[in-house]
Figure 1 (cartoon, rainbow, N blue to C red):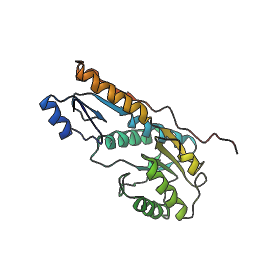
Figure 2: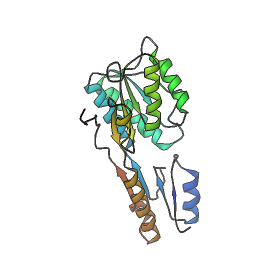
Figure 3: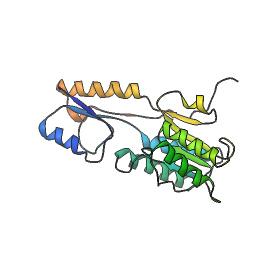
Length: 214
């Protein structure tokens, strides 16, 4: 291969270090803290915008379903979530026994357990659309209603979540753009550009509610 693209990056990722040491052109979907081409989604802004939106509609006790702790974007997401909680004066309901990498059934069960407590979240921030399906199932298992008892903001890479529940709030992440930027950056390195000049970051465009017609 003339160039490589890798995902699910970690801080100081050993795959990135290996290729840097050997001069192999590559790009990462996500950041590593090393100097090389990458494209990433601004998960700090995603989490912070989600918290602000939930606080703006009156939600005060928020839970985060985060990425796995070993991945770089876990830290970005958690920092955005906690910084925005302080900014808006909301509180966190811990939900760290599962991540978006757990099975649908595990997330559903843990959500239901959480929502049956006396002090439960009235808002969720979810880092993955598939996991959001499980969160909603858990909320409904506990006898609660989305949009009335609790609101959920979820990242998505395709326009599917509103087909599942119109009450969901979504933030779009453009995977087609990510693929194009990653390909462009690898080709740029092969073409002689400096690796540190081939880095891009996509910003979320806001939290979207369902706007279809009945």
